[in-house]
Length: 263
Ligand code: GLU
Image (cartoon, rainbow, N blue to C red):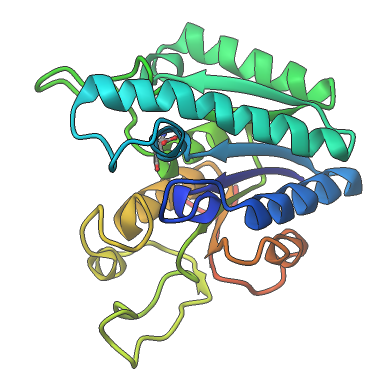
């Protein structure tokens, strides 16, 4: 299978912004093993800004754009250095691709992106993607960025014709209610259609439930499912759950991609 795995900052870093070494090492080990099993793996990794904050000893997430860009530029190096070193231990070669919205919006640039992804996978490399936060900034009143990696990973899954998109977050999946405030909330294991009622469950973007919140995850599911790609939301706390997800075993919430015979 061609699998796109998206990891959020909450999975990769401690609250200090510093790398969660044990977590990242486990993640890289499992992804390397899945690749050894024969799957093609594409990693969409957040954490550039968060890691830049740690590396530059900034007091917190920057509020102004230039500092955010600078943090992303520093943190992206740190991220790739870490992935290069860890994947290298298992004999895998990583490739960095930093995207801006134009790269996937304009047909010619989208084709270029698809071409390089296909070639990298042919060459057995493991592409690691992120938005190019050092240069991609929204102009006033004009949205020129994708803005978060839930959506970015779904767009990438569509571009490369992935079979499966996995979003690793700090929650176990989609619940019938907000599990932080409602003890009766139950995990929904499978979703075959994203209804308005389901969207209402997800609440607004930017909640404490992961960087993008549940709303961006449902948006990602819609994009991926429309292209026939299944999407799973699972907790990144235990990277070994990726084995179950790849094997189709129940884990987190699986959103079923539209099959060719569905309208
Ligand atoms: N591109 C951002 C970063 O690497 C993360 C975006 C997101 O968390 O979705 O810091």
